[in-house]
Length: 55
Image (cartoon, rainbow, N blue to C red; front, top):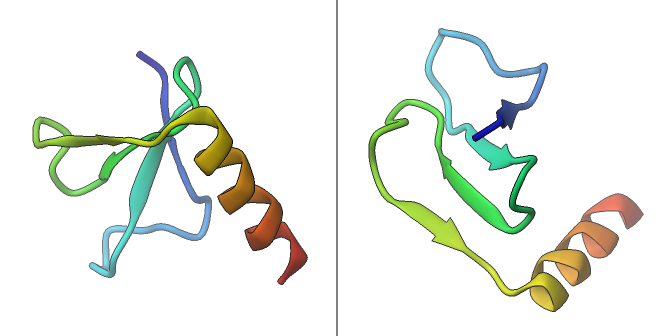
């Protein structure tokens, strides 16, 4: 899988997630890559991205 996190993310802590480029809508905690993955239906994920892009 191809996971990607924000370029603003660093090793100083903080709350960062990674998104799965191969499966849009899948996210995980960047500090726990072996941990659980959240999966959102495509319509929900797309609505989130559209709303996020507005702000």
